[in-house]
Length: 225
Image 1 (cartoon, rainbow, N blue to C red):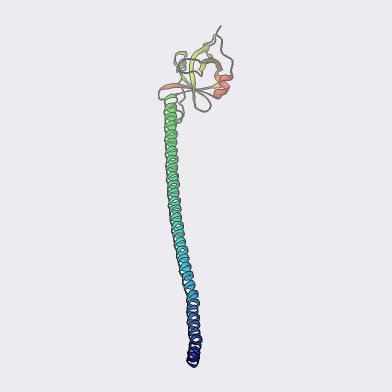
Image 2: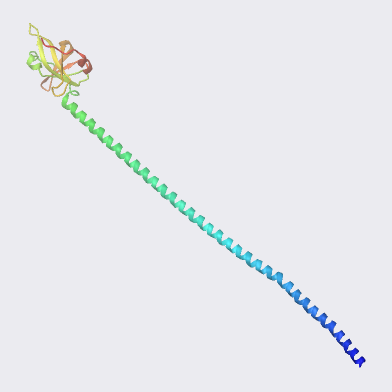
């Protein structure tokens, strides 16, 4: 009986270490598998996170580039509009200046024509032929009175208003009304025959003095006695 129990104990003792060793090996193998699998899983997770971050970065960069392109296009469009507006304003200013210049030229021409017309009306023979000498007996007080008078520049300066004769019947002085307009504001001045050239033009007696308008206007006013 003891021998049987001893045999049984030996069998159990032999089996237990073997089982224990098998269990330890299994546990170690499982832990190894866990240890081997864990770093791979971590690396995979990190790779996924890194990939997502890179994708987000690429998306942000693309959006930023699109916004920059849009901003550049808008700035270029605004610059083109500003340039077109400036060119249009410059064209309008140039056209306005040309119009003003043309109007000024037309006004100057009209003024010149009006001045020439007035000069022709007041002094129609200033640029005409020389006066003809008076025939004997044509220089009378009646013929001289009212005759148009011109200064040294052949400009009409007035009319003869009075002829003064001496006791022998010769013309001593001629009174000419200088300045004024249409008989208003005229100043009578006295001139001698030495200051005058008297002749005829187109059938009318004309009187011309060697004095200028300024010299005539500076003479004292004639006072009749």
